[in-house]
Amino acid sequence: MKLKGKVKFVNKDKNQFFHTLRKRVDQHFIEKNISRHANGTMVLKSVVMLAAYILPFVFILLFQPPFALSLLLWVVMGLGVAGIGMSVMHDANHGAYSSNPRINDLMGCTLNLAGGGVLNWKLQHNILHHTYTNVVPMDEDIQDRVVVRLSPHTVTRFIHKFQWIYAFFFYGILTLYWVLLKDFVQFVSFIRSGVNTQTKTENQLLLVKMIVMKVVYFLVLFGVPVIYFNIPFSYILPGFLLMHFTAGMVLTVVFQLAHTVEGTAHPVANEHGVIENDWAIHQLQTTVNFARHNKWLSWYVGGLNFQIEHHLFPRICHVHYPDIAPIVKQTAEEYGLVYMENESFTAAFRSHVATLQRFGTLPDINEAIG
Image (cartoon, rainbow, N blue to C red; front, side, top):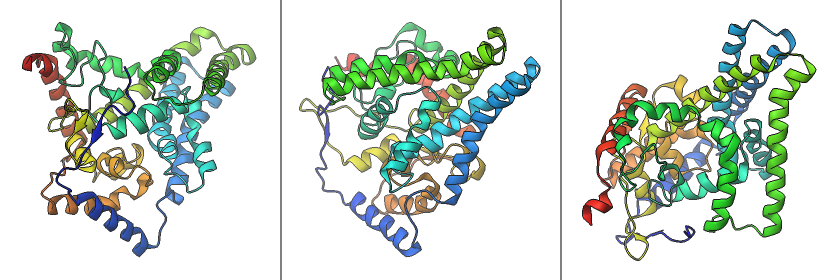
């Protein structure tokens, strides 16, 4: 299936919402005389997130604490992995961390520390998800996962009626699947679909780099403790799995609270591959903010609770989202558009569970129409 270029947005009504909003946001940065990119707060956060991942591992190697304490340290590492994913590499791979592409590339490679490939992430997230949010089959994040149904336009299976219970287990193993298989699956599928436009030679080099990166990743997390510090493999493996379960749970839940909740739209292109909507308005209709007044949560999740602002302005560093959110909300309301948000994390989580329940029993809309 050729994905690239299959769907396009047509602003039939010539709505000026995004044109007006962009001018107002630009004016905000001019008046404040500040950069759209990282500031001191962002740099400090990057250091903290990287330290939360690296230092507990160093402690385990040097001091070999009791097993229970080591498991706690692996949990901290998992929180660090999630923090790097949500705050550091995410902004960098959007080009939002710095105006210097080299710095973005460097900070974007922090994804390698978690065992993930940068190019595949950019293709899945920056191109497919951000361009075609909640559009099947373009948005990879809601495609048919067999066991978990995240769209009313994918196949309904008997097991889905229980997904609101078991889905969280699969959320927890997401990063482990990513490290072991996902990059290779996407490497093949993105070439076949045309999303990956690199030459054959470039992709051969990419595959070699990806294999080397993953070998190094496993050598560091398993080889170094076992071979150089004489720590039993049976001591490391449970912690490694716990780290990934923690990271996977945090990353996936935070992401789902923005797109798979009550109120979000799941539009389908017409027979000509057209969605008759302005792209920016589409982002408002498929994205929901949550707990944006919770400063501690906003700090940790890297502004992913400001998903509306992020989807409209992905190249602005997330530390600025709390300041531009009122501008986005006011402009949306002026144009008669709904600015969707859940006031708390709990409300967003409940909405996600309710959506899992609804999608678990809702017939495939396409089949119902047929």
